[in-house]
Image (cartoon, rainbow, N blue to C red; front, side, top):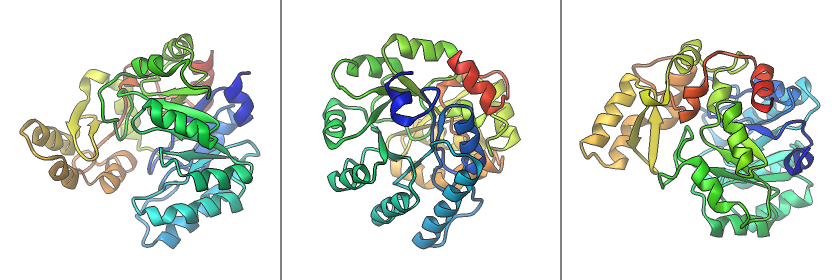
Length: 315
């Protein structure tokens, strides 16, 4: 037991990151039953883009209720589900109505939202997209329960500065009172041990969960992750800063545009992040989609069950 397991009421201080299109009630409940905390994500359980904000809300409400039907253990949901920021207050109300135990703030840091969630007794994890001490201290003052620090080793939307995960962690430890989780490059128990040695109290894991049997990612994606290493990844500029992907046809094009001086906005149009993540990672279309993973793939050598993964990471 440590502060994170006590705050979240879980057995192991490990969180399955919210990964657009790749989460659903089955994955999240499996993580919960294995002793960790799972997060639903934008498009959880879906195969098509929503047609309205109302559909976004109803889809998430249904997926939350599916999780509750599968497990009685805690789980989480972010309150930012789309680029339409007008959806945030509606999503906050939904999370309170559904008594979701844990909510993720991706650096929005709105005092009114924090006050509302705290009044409802909901735990708040704050994950800063660009770790900095000013925002970390603000999150602490607003009442965040846990701080997630993300290094450049992560998958998905990368931070603005190319600072590795362990360097980010070393900079913050001892300067904030919140318990810290480390995100980026956590692929095996050695990485967990290294994070603990640098005084992180938990780990935030994405890519390793993509390669589990319970994840809805395409089987070809799981097999590629197992057979690839960090040296296979392509890093390219896009909005807001950087992305990395296994070398799909689309990723090769984005990489070449980046190398040849195309603007971030031009690359972002070709990348078409939301739709083409679905094509690549959910449907296994490596011509028209991309496969966003972190550098921790070098440590992943087998498709495992969620329980096997968590037991190994925490051994």
